[in-house]
Image (cartoon, rainbow, N blue to C red):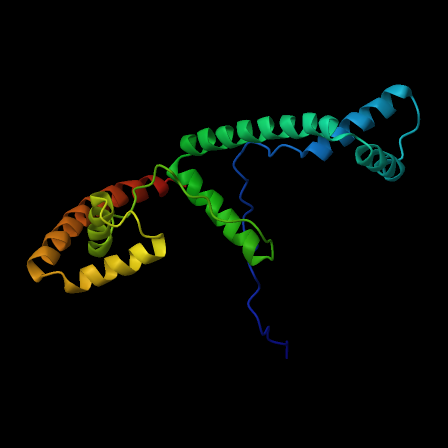
Length: 197
C-alpha cells in the first residue's frame, strides 16, 4: 500500500519581479575604496581584493579630516539626490505595482529576510482623523497649549475631551463621519486600481 503524504505538496509561488527603484549610494568609505581599486587596476598591477581592502583601509585611516570631509560631502549630496529620486519614483508607481511589490516584500519577510518594510503609497487616500484627534487638532491650532511639551499636551487634550459636552463631541463625530464617508469612496476607487495585477 503506498504511503500517504502527510503534507500537501506545496505549489511553487510565482516569483514577483521587484519594481525598479533608485540605487542607494555608497558611503564615503565605499567611494574611496572604489577610487583606490580603479587606481590599482589602472596601474596594471594584479588585483587581490582582500589585500587591496587592507591597503585602502590603512590609507583611509591616514587621511586628514579635510580629505575625508570631501568624501563625506559627496556622499551627503548623493544621498540627498537618492532621497529625491526615490520620492519621485514612489509618485510614479501605480496602485497595482504597490500591491505587487508589497506582496513580494511580504513573501521575502516570511522567508526570513529582515529590514524590508512594505512601501507606503503617497498617493493612497489617507484615513481621516478620529473625533478626538480632530478636537486635539483644533486645540493645538488655538495656541493655548503651545507652552506644554507634546506629552503634556496629549494629557491636557485627553482631559479636555473627557469634560467636553455632548453637543461639542457630536460636532466632531459629525465631522469624522463625513470625512470617513468621503474616505471610503476614495479608498474603494484606489483599491479598484490595485486589482489590475
